[in-house]
Amino acid sequence: MKKIDILKKLRSSRLRPTKQRVEIAKFLFEREKTFHFTVESLNKLLTKKSTSKIALATIYNTVHAFKAAGHLSEVEVRGNKTYFDTNVSNHHHFYDSETAELIDIDANDIVIQKIPKAPNGKKIKNVEVFINLKN
Amino acid sequence: MKKIDILKKLRSSRLRPTKQRVEIAKFLFEREKTFHFTVESLNKLLTKKSTSKIALATIYNTVHAFKAAGHLSEVEVRGNKTYFDTNVSNHHHFYDSETAELIDIDANDIVIQKIPKAPNGKKIKNVEVFINLKN
DNA sequence: AGACTAGTTTATAATTATTCTAAAGTGAAA
DNA sequence: TTTCACTTTAGAATAATTATAAACTAGTCT
Image (cartoon, rainbow over all chains, first blue to last red; front, side, top):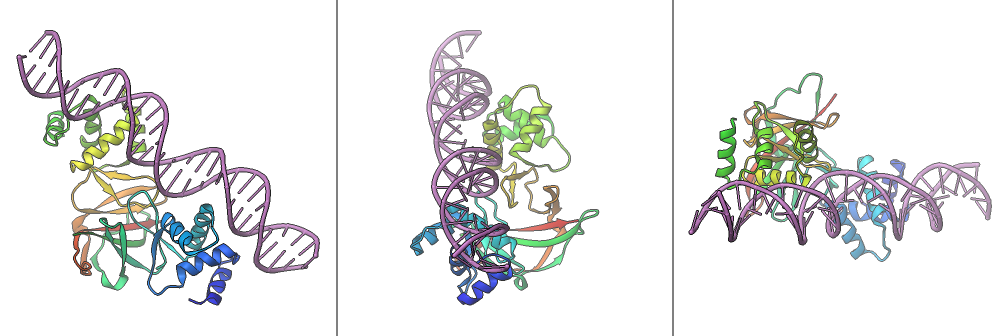
């Protein structure tokens, strides 16, 4: 994703393309593969990569703004920290608890044959499959 | 589950049946249906039910000890608090984000037809399906 | 039964992740 | 270029959980 697209992406979501947002967006979205991270890991990576320090609160703000805009998804991982994913399409995850690493699984690679009905008055919003790994 | 069984359960897990552990175990395991809770909710319920106050740290200790012994499972719920489940068999969950409520799904009620291979050198430990609900 | 000891409970402090606050800064519309 | 709503920022506040260390107790050994 080019810089111009980053700007479009931000503007189309009514997010002012500030220096910080552009830098974080470039870091997150200008890559081939999907990227999984926590706010802590993102902060470390940004600090290493860049000269200008972005406040932790700004990273929280920005990540949440990107999530609200649909540019990031939050991943179902049990544990203390919240994981985010640049892949916002419907998909699933492997989780390697040894390395605390997430790996995407394409929605087409999992087929569910039988699924229960939602309880009274409720509807199914989405189905997330989580495959825990061991060595 | 009777009191004698609670004592057996504790002893078989090498957990001394202290007053607090027995009280918590009775509260958790002497019921028909599976029970979902957070440490906070359990603490409130125990405080309401019982005369003797159990320290919050003890509840954390005990819940973790029960989990380590395989008497409780931790549920995959994104969010700040950790959810536990008295159902330790292989099963899945509905999650109602409106009410922050978990509902068990029997393992037989979900059939997965196609599943990806585990990455190099890894094996599949287990598969958890999580169905998010909406109104 | 009495005393010992390792395991347990407890109140409180510490830690960790996240959110709040309010003052200073800044994009972009006019 | 002025203006102002939106942002950023440092630091305080909050919330969940874990650590600490002193007091307590179940079970064992006599």
